[in-house]
Length: 334
Image (cartoon, rainbow, N blue to C red; front, side):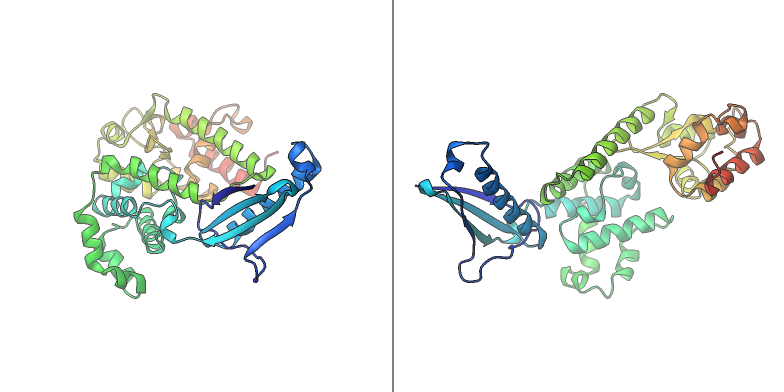
């Protein structure tokens, strides 16, 4: 009797190294493997299957593996069948919708969350386009079709897709900005399914650490003194666009969450509507991570007699806080 188990790799995976004559991974496992689920023979068989799957994942082409156990001898054959790219989990229309929404309204970037990256897009040109748009947005430029068309004017894939007309079509068919989080979640979820499974202990530890960090970040962002862009703009008597520009110049602190968009701590605004002095210099000293700056500002410091740096800045003690930031940047924690 032949028992077949078919495995489709869940990302662009590849045909593993195998016999050119047979197109198979082959080997015999003793019959005892069928009788004892804990036997070394069964473990060896499973290890062989796992090795074939990992080899297929390693080469970057879509592949289907079919595992056949041949009768009581437990002969195992693993057949390899290349698949069309269409068999992979991807949604090109969702990618087009997200890119169009972001081109139409760059404020959509505030609702993406830190998890979505250019590598999550399946279409290679979409990866490059998203990366270029995000870079423009982060540098304070307007990520719009004309700028992108200039940047990709020599890109063969851009020309093949239709050039400026392709970007215009994306904008014409763009969904509402409020749909951005759901579309981004779908793209990220499909990208996750295309990736190979990871069971390495280090990867598992890092994954757990990221989960704990995301949980803590969610708690911080859910605090009542964390304001959205509109509420924060009202607090400082400015427009939403002014808030965005101040964020890019690091004059204000904004924290990006996975689901809640950018949130602005209310404590960085004084009673008269002024902003924390010295904040751009703190960013310059500690790096460009808003979360690193947030931790520095909110953690009580012995060097400040147990006071948090944000409270010292609110009282105008800028030099003391900058000295502490410079000391930490140098690694002087004693």
